Image 1 (tube, rainbow, N blue to C red):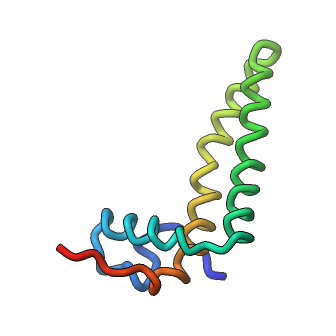
Image 2 (image 1 turned 45 degrees about the horizontal axis):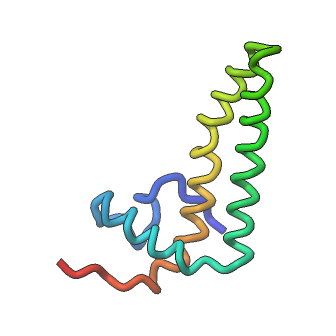
Length: 99
């Protein structure tokens, strides 16, 4: 599986404007299989749970806030490429939008 760090890197979407690319990716996401959806959701949980644990520890350790912020900032950097890559193979199933 090739990782796409931007929707513009997906070959089928390169010539389209941003809003169309995002709409097509959102529609393609509906075709994800059960295991693919579970994989994405487990990955999201693995990133978000430690961040919220750090937020709960702020009263004891102010550095926990910095770690929580770092995790929240890394979230889209980790999740989006996997989400784009999983959705890219279903782009051909998405019906083109009429103008």
